[in-house]
Length: 154
Length: 91
Image: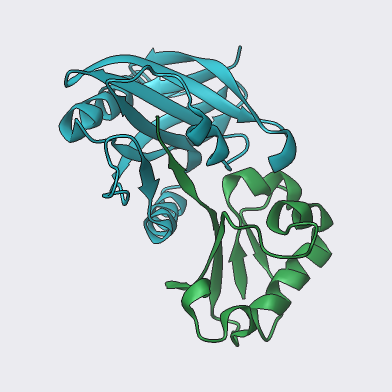
């Protein structure tokens, strides 16, 4: 099983975001650096959920918001490690909708179950495969760390 | 012009996050990109040669789908083209 490294701040932020938007789904981007040990996520960027027609069980990030997030990330020397969203009163497992709409191969999709307004389980799934036709989700272990990989503790 | 490559497509673009191409239109820019990096073609286009539905293109700040001339829109050397796959889902 692969490993997704999140800083404590990122882990707390994405779970808090899910609680803030409950009973609607939250969503956002995970930025970081690719390391020999996998993606090291150092920033979570909250995004708006454009699925206002069905925000309790659907999410979508406006493409231009992604463009702007990418521009900021590039300036910081960071890249898209993945994305996160919440499942209000629903398990932290990927759904058929999540799978059908997942297109960022090699990136992590992090899902937090928010039960009755409180963040419960958070899981990560790598979108593996070489093409859209053979893509698959593989569960990853989330490692929560106080500092990013390689950071000087002093 | 510069074409920005999203994370999942960089392995098929020589690991680059941006590729510079000479082109007069968006379509020519994509053609130049995939000519230089043929492995990108199947990720961007269907077998019928149409841009995949989940691939968003932004010419500077404009969604190419909503430009009057779409991919036939003229471009200049100072323009940028961002390739952004869509992000959506739900339980």
